[in-house]
Image 1 (cartoon, rainbow, N blue to C red):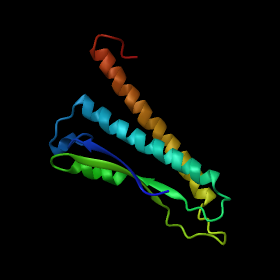
Image 2 (image 1 turned 90 degrees about the horizontal axis):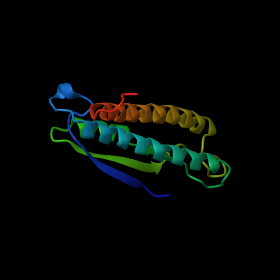
Image 3 (image 1 turned 90 degrees about the vertical axis):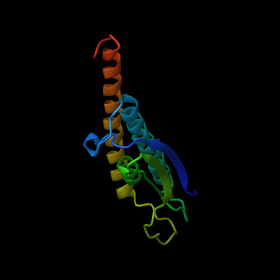
Image 4 (image 1 turned 135 degrees about the horizontal axis):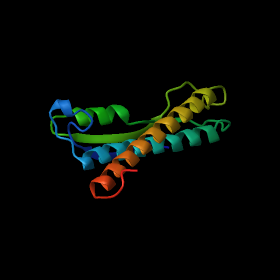
Length: 138
């Protein structure tokens, strides 16, 4: 598996309005959706790694997006955030496989909790939109 990239424009000051940017609902939704997409990709890669734990020569993959998102948000004019899938640098075992089951299970649990949090934040934003449009905030 080669490196894969998912790129999205990110406006300045979205999660950090004290940096000087104004925060619009669409900007907040965009950042939250990007995080959900990155976490979803990480869940898939972790599942693939665990499914190949006994495959000789398999190289585990890892997903990164948080630092790219932070940099894009900190950029004075906004920027592009990228989800990157790359080879895990863990040294392989005797069969050439470098999947560490323990760290993959921890990653799966952390990613699930982060994903649930981001989805709840998205749902809260949609409830605000619904309430502002005259509907219920529930």
